[in-house]
Image 1 (cartoon, helix red, strand yellow):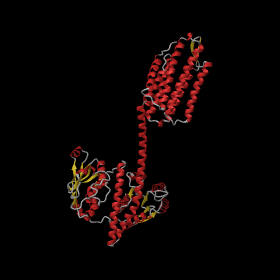
Image 2 (cartoon, rainbow, N blue to C red):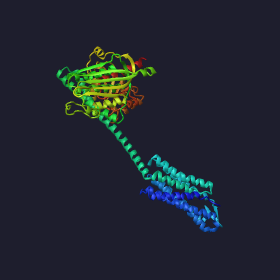
Image 3 (tube, one colour):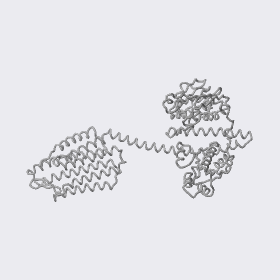
Image 4 (cartoon, rainbow, N blue to C red):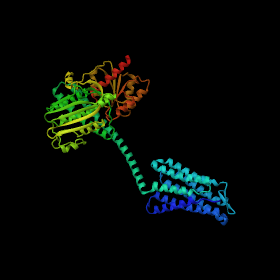
Length: 633
């Protein structure tokens, strides 16, 4: 019998070169490098002994049978040592592998060594007689034990996959399979020695894929980046939780202050008290505006700001901005001028809240920094002719420009204009309140809408801000002249909103804050609705079992049983007479996305604190109207 030893010779030459490289160019003191080195030397020794035993088997008549048995047993021992070192190398990359797995691996290796030793006395694996090599009845046991060790190690790799990146684990799996494949091939072919060649390739893969300095550095960097990403996610979630908590904690007392003040403005006839209350209203709204700016900039920078496009009327936005800035402009002796293209469409599709915020930010900024003269808003619409002809519906660009005759901006300061917390010419403008966030937020919101913002300014003469935002048209009817439409409207004080009445309707408000309940009842006093109150989730459950309500307003954050849990208990209790009653959530959590999450829980609407009287009444009126339509329809 003759063996082909060419693959063993190739393996020895290749591994010798690798050994020299590892001792010089790729020398390292890492534990992985030491494990690979031991494995490499074991494979070289195994390949050398394999060649010797192949020679003695072919020329057995020239060698004593006992010596032949010892030499072939040495080859089997060296193969077992290679397997042991290979497994040790792999375990080096998986420090979290259990003691049980390591113990099973060691037991299998000891069994393999024991079986080889037992063969010296029994010849179960192989034996020599008169210089001729014979396979024993259990010849394949040694191969089977080696494969069992390899497959067990494959199980360990899969079980501890999280210890390493996916790429490293794939390389280690390949490291395991190469010797396995070559072992199976040698068992099939018989006369071609392939095992050492496969082991040589596995050494090559392990060294250059995992143990080269550059790769180790890359893997270390990737691991650090992964850790940093996880820490950033944790920090971002903590930031969001903190933001939600602060939003609730700050806005809740403001809700009480502004709500009670609204009732003073509505009920008092004393001019002096009304003056004091009006100052409270202005200061309270100013504080609320600052809080909202801080929340907005935090949401934008954390990527949690979302747009909610819907149909809206442009006149309504312009009217709101006019009412919000009119009084401040009059106090400063300024002309507040609103202009628009009368022929522009009246209805659009976009985020009404954010467009109003952009327009109001530019107007309030102009009013703040203008001592004399005027602040002018001009709104127009540039239709997109291509969109019209393509059949995708009318669309174009909404152009909002605000021009003031204020202090102006130096050219060298323009580049800092939109930076957060930036206040230009601080010494000159130190008497002007503000956080320096308004224009930064405006620029970010415009960018989110794929729009643009430009500024022209002459220091000491004034500034002009122009915003362009792509919008779709929903109502092509001409808007008409803003001032003409404004003069046609009935002049109603914003804080003395005309109430709708719903006598006979019963509402339950659930809030653990006594002041909030007083404010809520006061805001709905003139609606002629009966308003009951509960100060906890448990009290609410008892009241809803006894009394039928038309609407339930539920505060979210309450001790012991919060609003969501209370709502679900009512909803899931089919014996509760209010299990189908519409429930509106009240919350001071103004974080982005909460409305969608509340609606997903089953609430019919979301009302943010501080509660606005008009918004509260509008919600109640809409829900009662929908109920009436269901009953009649």
